[in-house]
Image (cartoon, rainbow over all chains, first blue to last red):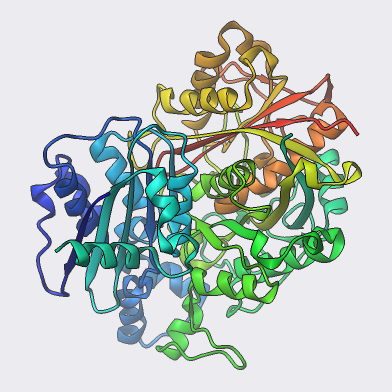
Length: 194
Length: 400
């Protein structure tokens, strides 16, 4: 198994532009997606994966409330109560259209697949490591598959990990039956490799 | 020996019991109407397929995350009404569900400006899916793992496909699987509308028009639907509703918002599922398509079928449930398994509700007016996501 794990503190710049060819799409990225893209770039810096390589990716709980803070401010500034009408008239224009993309769970999986042309067996998951490792072990693919996970913390800290793993390796990992977050798999293995 | 479906729990626009849902599928009842559970003053589109019991919308307070509440109820029904879980130890059963974006109770957020816990609850105005679903698994003593699938419109199909693989390969003895989603709330409904995929200009019950020449978008629905999957060797024949014999999933890797217009990856998902099922394209009797009613969906699905089925495509009966219910996003594939089971049990392809005029860009064989009675042994079920994930499931009729 080959693994890359990265963690970026709240104000730390994530060097995502070093690892993307479709730069216009970066505005849709959350910080954890950026971190995952960097990990993917480092994992495949020498040779891109074959397009049929299976790719399974897990996100963590997103702190989506941040997206709606500007809408709250509109209500504060105008001193108006909540109502459907006011929501549509005042709040919706204050919510960035990008937030709709950022709150969707499968976007990191999608963006990475687009960047690397990954069209094979796949799953977009949330939460536990078990789902990620089970998906890998159930794969019929002959060879290594790609697994990844990312997490955006409430303070803006972003962490991500990507790995090449065989179904056999997935079946032997102690986190196979774990309900702990998928990112912990990468944190643990990534720190061990450093 | 195959993987079989032996139980269903349902909360959906079609109803809150299997009997009620199947009756409404048969009748082609239009379950999309103007939203009742939410004040929609100011909305430019007000249509949705809300969860109904005996025709009436099931209403909840704003601080209730509907996708969690109804998933809890659907699993409760599945366990109490079918009782198959008693055959297995808690560790032998997994829970695999498709789900959507988190529910943010924006009304409470504005009023309280902080995330106070509702009385008697230990959750806030931001309802986090992992915690809620893990709580439900614990409540029903499902200890074989909880996995949440999030591939948007393909989420529940990926959950069902992975569950099929788990049992087929002996990783788990049984799986409760399906999906639960509700985007019929302020943030998610308007957000979805802003993505440009929602229909406009039609009366609510007629707004979602799968495959129709005049379609201009989809309509949101909501629901929680769970299936009990187990190995055929462990199931009583009388309980078997259908067999799952093949699964394939691929990724478009084309664009975030649009399907690949050439549909090569969707075609590849079909080919993988057929290969997994060890059958040929000629053996498929009908196809239950994703059929969202968005302008780009129908031509894309037609092109995928054309690549796999060739000249048979124009005579292969196809169907979409979404005209009746709206698009349940993270749980659409699970709900559509009910109509697939209906087709297999009753040997009919039902008319697609709200389809009236053929689109020359998608010359599919869509049934109108009355059910098409044909012999159906193998049925293909497709779903595709906003984001590019594709799924194909092959179902087989079980002769009791």
